Length: 269
Ligand SMILES: C[S@@+](CC[C@H](N)C(=O)[O-])C[C@H]1O[C@@H](n2cnc3c(N)ncnc32)[C@H](O)[C@@H]1O
Image 1 (tube, rainbow, N blue to C red):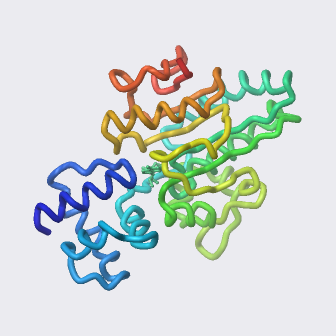
Image 2 (cartoon, rainbow, N blue to C red; image 1 turned 60 degrees about the vertical axis):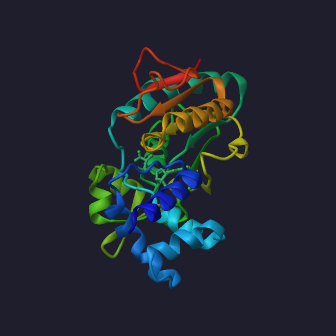
């Protein structure tokens, strides 16, 4: 692919999703977009770049889907889920019990679903703490393809084994051939919805806990700051924001402050 074609595609991807492609990624972009060329009968990358200027829904979405990295696994990094159970839930549950309000959790880059299902498992495992409290999880992502997998809730043996103990697997998934499907009691806790973090987030409503992990790393500082500002508007004043292990807000944004419990767990400033 010629350099100006690469630049045009990278500009499109950044505008649509915030994902910043550094130079030297042309090979990766070609590999990911070749199936899109075949699917839409486009003969080469130069034509794709031209068509993207005026492209409508399907082609735009296919390129975004192809350019997102949807890598995830159950109970990824463990610590965020320990903090969820030991810090976030006890404090917020006590408050909800006093006020009678529901507890809302938002998984803002849900990818193929392992993160919201892990949260749902953690909620079910803390049922006594959450007794009489209405808990719901909103799982959103920009990638329609990833969300379709998440909603389907079907994982290969390999995917299921990445992070799920045998006990959790048997309790919350049923075997279908050689794969495992999330049981209805897990699915019922989660609503899946397509949402681009660059756009207005008002449709999310007010939430108590946000998991937004391993997505800001793809954005430049300005985009991170914009997204975090919008997330702050959706979190209740004493709610929590959990970022990924490699994500820091130092020098990025003053909307959130790290908690004493963990450097990647934040509260609105
Ligand atoms: C590496 S996955 C992270 C999955 C999960 N949070 C985890 O940590 O395991 C990153 C996800 O961010 C999503 N994403 C990228 N840009 C986005 C945007 N602008 N709005 C919403 N989701 C986005 C991608 O589609 C992808 O599914």
